[in-house]
Amino acid sequence: MSKQEKQKLFDTSYLHIMRQGEPSIQNSLCVYKSDSGLSCAAAPFIINYHPQMEENDFCNVIKDFPEDVDPIAVNNANFVVLLQKAHDFSKDINNSRFLEKYKEIMAGISHNYGLTIPDVGQVL
Image 1: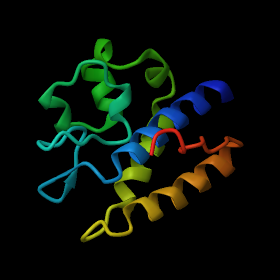
Image 2: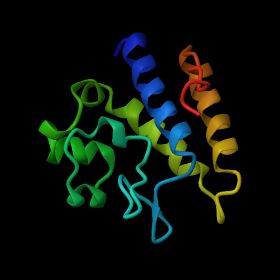
Image 3: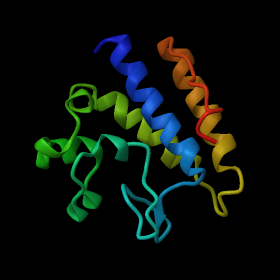
């Protein structure tokens, strides 16, 4: 897994969540795609969404739907799971601090992997 691939995955996921501004939650659980159209941090790497994916973690989505997941994400599944956990661990009871918590976790990931946080100015 190259640093360049990690940076691309990090940027895509980070900008997606920053644009969205809130977590993808259904019945108090994080989901790939909510009924309201929100989606999780791993969703940008799902090419063709199937509701059955909701019953699986990202590694099982790859196993069960390999043709429906971006090949770079397939090759870096554990890193995508880490990005997904940043989303999932950032939600709180009323999500008032979601973005604040999300940015803190992602800053830690970027530091640990030597990545840069993308400029969100153009997407907000």
